[in-house]
Each structure stands twice: as C-alpha cells, then as structure tokens.
Amino acid sequence: MSALLTVENLNVSYGAIKAVQNVNFTVHDNEIVSLIGANGAGKTTILRTISNLTKPTSGHINFQNQDILGMDSAKIVSSGIAQVPEGRRVFAGMTVQENLQLGAFTRDKGTNLKSEYALIYDQFPILKERRNQDAATLSGGEQQMLAMGRALMAKPKLLLLDEPSMGLAPLFIEKIFDIIKTVNAQGVTVLVIEQNANQALKIADRGYVLESGQITMTGTGAELLASDDVRKAYLGG
Amino acid sequence: MTLFIQQVIKGLMLGSVYALLALGYTMVYGIIKLINFAHGDIYMLGAYFGYFFIKVLHLNFFIALILAMAVSAVIGVLIEYIAYRPLRHSPRIAVLISVLGISFLLENGMTYLYGSDQRSFPQAIKTVQYHFYGIQVSNIQLIIAVTSVVLMLLLTYVVKRTKMGRAMRAVSADPDAATLMGININHTISFTFAIGSALAAAGGVLIGLYYNSIDPLMGMTPGLKAFVAAVLGGIGIIPGAAVGGWLIGILETMVQATSFSAYKDAVVYAMLIVILLIKPTGILGKNKREKV
Ligand SMILES: Nc1ncnc2c1ncn2[C@@H]1O[C@H](COP(=O)(O)OP(=O)(O)OP(=O)(O)O)[C@@H](O)[C@H]1O
Ligand SMILES: [Mg+2]
Image (cartoon, rainbow over all chains, first blue to last red; front, top):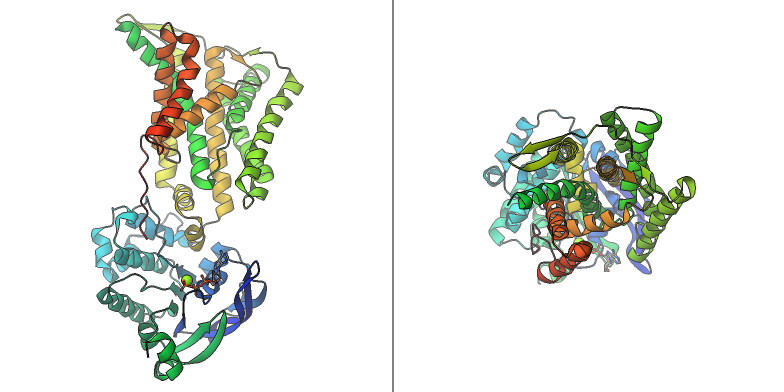
C-alpha cells in the first residue's frame, strides 16, 4: 500500500494558541482513516490546513508525492482532495442542484453534468426530490448528504470529512457511516474526523487519537476500539 | 392623472439609473461586506469616459457606452486590488477610510485635471419627443430605460446561469466553503468589481446624455441615493437593488412635482431612516434565521 497523504511535523498556531503540535500521520490508498479527539483537540484545524484554508507555522503535507502546502485551492481540489466541512456549510440561497454543480467547479467546463448528478442522486435519493429546493431549507441530515454529494462531484481521490455525524439522530448516523463505507468501496480514500469514536473506529482501517493538538495513540480501528484508554476517554468507560 | 403618469415615467427612468448604481453597491456588499462609497465616483468617471469617446473620438453613442463601461471595469478592478484587497483582513474601519480616500482622490483628481466646471455632454443622439394620450416621452428616456433593463437582464443571466455567476453567489454565501470547491476568491471579487463598475459607468453615460452636463462631483448625490436604494431593496440582494432604484426614482420625482420639491433629497434620506427602523433587511430581505 502506498501513501496517498502524508502529514509531517505539522504545527499550527492561532496567535499564542498552539492548536496543532508536531502532528504526523499517513493515509494510504483506499483506506478509511479516522482521527478522533475531543472538542478543541485541533481536528478541524488539521483538515483546514490540508485544504489550505489555514496556514501552518511549519510542517509538510504531501499528497501523491507532491508538496501541496500553500497550493492554490483550485489546484488542491483538482489534484483530488475534496472536503465536507464541519457544519456542512451548504450554500444558502442556491438550489440543491446548484450546490452539486459547485462541487464540480474545477471540472465544470460548461459540459453536461447530468449523468453525474444522476450518480449522486442514486446514492442520495432524497436529494433528487429536493433538487430545486434552497439548500438552506434542508434538514441537518439532508444537508450532510448534500455536503457529501457536493464533495463527491469533485471526483476526489481523497475525501476529508469533518464530524459528519454531528447533530444527527442515531438512525441517520448509521446511514452516513454506511455511505462512507460505500464511497470507500468505490475507490475513494477517506479521512474522517469524529468525536463519535465508536462509529468512526468501527468503519476505520486505522485510527489516530488527537489530544490537545498532539497525536497520542494510533492503531487499527479494532485495536483502538479495544483499548482501555480510548474506551475511558471516548466511549464512556 | 396624466401628470401623475408623466412623473411615474420620469421616475422610472431616473430610477433605472439609480438601480444600475445600486447593483454595484449590493454586489460588492454581498461579496466582501463593504459599502463602497467610492462607487458614485466610478459613475462620474464613466460619464467622463463617455464624454471623451463621443466628443474627442467621435464614436457612436452605444460604442462609447460600451467602451466607457469596459474602461471603468478595469479601473474598478484596480481600485479593489490596490486599495481594498491589502486591507481585507484589517478592521473594517481601515477599509472604510481607504474607500473614502479613493472617493476624494477620484473627485479631486478629476477636478485638478479637468476643472470643477460643468461640461456639456455632447448631444450624441438627437432628442425626439413622442406624445401618447397627452403623455410626453423622449427617445432619450426610452434609451435610458431600455438600456438599463437590458443590462439588468444580462446581469441576471450572468449571475444565475454562468459559472462565474455561481462562483459569485457561492463566495457571497460562504467564502470558506467556496474555497473548498476550488473557487478562487480573489478572481471572483475582481469580477464583481468589474461588473459593478461597468454598470455604474453605464449609469453615468446615460445620465450625461439626459442632463447634458457632467462634473467631477456628479457622483456624490446619486451615489448616496443608490446606496439608499440598495438598502431599501435589501442590501446584498440583486433584484432588491432594481426595486429600490425604481422606488427611489419615483419617490423623488413625485416629491419634486409637489410644492415640496426643495426637499426631494431629504425625503430620500428620510426613507433610509424609516427602512432602517421598520425593516432593516429591506423590502426583499429575509429576516435571517440561520440553520446550524
Ligand atoms: N480561528 C481561530 N482563532 C483562534 N483560535 C482558534 C481558531 N480556530 C480554532 N481555534 C482554537 O484552536 C483549537 C483547536 O480548534 P479546532 O477547531 O481545530 O478543534 P476541533 O478538534 O475541531 O474541535 P471540535 O470537535 O469542537 O470541532 C481550539 O482551542 C480552538 O479554540
Ligand atoms: Mg472541529
């Protein structure tokens, strides 16, 4: 298995706050990797840095053996990294379909995206029903699906997911994690960030535990699920 | 009744020009949350470019209009690049000071170069009056109204149907999420300034043709009124700018036709205060309730 994404010695600060300290991790081709951690551990900061929304103080981020740190966002997306941000962040005032179309922005050369919408609508039938509806009027779970569909429209090699289960009912959470597995089976590598350690580690090939900006543990999903420390800290004993 | 209709027509015509200007305010506000008070001065520059192309280069009116729009678009983009972009992450007050600086620079620069006197705008199109049922309309009024409506329809098409228009809406809605789509925020902002400035310039040239006179301070009052129009319609909302522009135009001409004509500007500003008190989000504005 070759490394698709490598993060090396990453440090990110917000003024005096060191949000991420010396973080190292790897995501291999076709894996699902989960990064778990409590509120404020620095999870979102890491994903934002990968997508160049936040500038690190030092470190390296390699994607397909190319240094992507500080690379233009359009280039990052077209090289194959798509992100479903924390809180979904669908575009309000635009329809579901326009949101999907924006997901394909870097590939959108005025060509017909119809067959691609169809693929997304197959995976998320609810979006098809709502395709002409303002994205802001969708429920939280529907918005999560839209945000995932939108990211998939970029045809990514690596999908970054920031707390996809946040604020969703248990049934919906199951559904979202099922979809993540399906997407992965279709050949998309997944890096998922979660506080919901149980679900995230169940589907993960490998996982990392992030505490106060530092990686404190790593192992396969099953190993971490079985670990006492993880159980105590994230799974309620 | 005919007098009333006559005033409505005049108001709609004047309102079209306010609407063209208000669109620039609203688009720029929508995308970078900045009230660009130098926008009225781009309208003035547009009128001067129109003057130059018609009077000096003897170009056809519509060609002069398009060229004035193009040159002003470039200037609008440069202003944003030089004076606003470096301050994008600074406190809002710093950007506002920069905006006022640009406004003074354009007004005083033009006064320095070409004097503060009014110049008569060339009669590029001969005025013809038409009469229907006692109502009088000139070809100039029709040209202003039709040109404005065509430009607004074009804008609607660009914003609704093109890739750049979608990028503009996405950046307005959520710049970070737009970046995650691979949208270049800087290019999108430049594009917005280009379009807004071109529309303002069109307004300036059309008003030059109508009033036959231009001067370096001609942008101040219409600039403020267009700002009121944008707020009235709902700042950041494109159709709102058109609605606001027409309403302000009609209101102003109505007041002018009464014995209170001296207060026509005061009425417009009073309107701003009333909107801010009653419905701060404007006529088409939604009272925002964000979903989390
Ligand atoms: N823009 C910012 N300015 C200042 N501090 C910030 C900023 N963003 C995050 N931080 C701080 O950095 C630390 C890590 O934040 P981050 O959002 O990465 O955490 P997280 O693991 O995603 O948390 P959560 O699970 O609550 O989303 C926190 O202490 C937070 O307060
Ligand atoms: Mg977070």
